[in-house]
Length: 125
Picture (cartoon, rainbow, N blue to C red):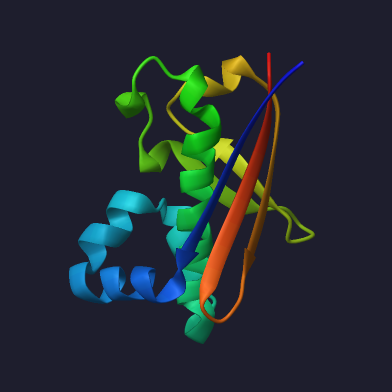
């Protein structure tokens, strides 16, 4: 069994400043429509959720890096972070065949006032 992992932590204020300074350009480059709708629904806590999804995407890229032929094979938009009916986050890959190399994948996301963190574990086929 081959296990791959990725972890990322980010300051929430860094994402907030990027969104405030770059606006829609930044948001649409990083996040899918579903992710934007989810984060915006969180009102005052939206930056925590944007940061958590940013950390999640970074953790995904770190975990799958050994599965890629070159680093630009996957973009921010190819990994979507959604939540199931119980609120647990999961990853949906879009317009990529990377999932064919993955037997199983799990993600954990957390955030507090200042930081967001994500951890991804992959079992490779």
